[in-house]
Length: 218
Ligand SMILES: [Fe+2]
Ligand SMILES: [Fe+2]
Image (cartoon, rainbow, N blue to C red; front, top):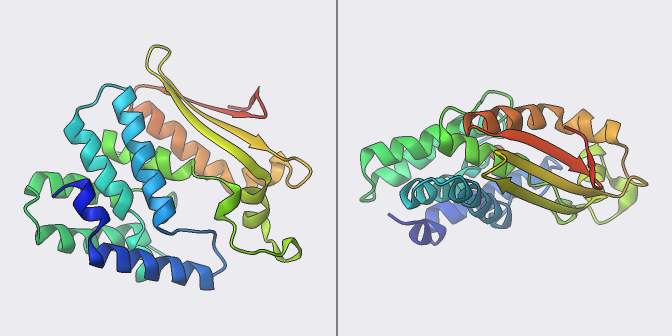
């Protein structure tokens, strides 16, 4: 089982579609394949920069692409539900049992309400997922109907994640239009996620840094 195969897996794609539809009804930001591809690639980038093996990187990409399939069942506990769904799907493939367990362990820990990083794969998945803040995740077209999540995401006009293996830092650099959202609003929504990122960076032997418009925040 490879990342390329899981990206084209009919059932995984159908579950992601349904999950994204459900979250649309709930008024959440975009959780489509575009989000999952970004998370997969960003998780792999973090691990690659820190010298992890191609195999660990591949497992993180598979976990990254599948991580939000549980939203097809219910937003609440979507991480744990997604891990169980992923277990069923991956069991039907040639993936070795220990790899499957590593993937589902990461998926099951990725939500800030119940999870935390337990190993490098779950840490990279958390960092990749919680740093996906960007304007084009907002579905509502009419700014008059933005909720706080829409406003904060819409305010972010640029996002980059940089890993410095020498300095042992993982940095999230945001460009924020502060005429749209204040930093109070940003932290109102993202404080727990940023704390989760800090724990995940520590799991990878690094410090988490957050800069906004070039200024250090964390
Ligand atoms: Fe999620
Ligand atoms: Fe996600």
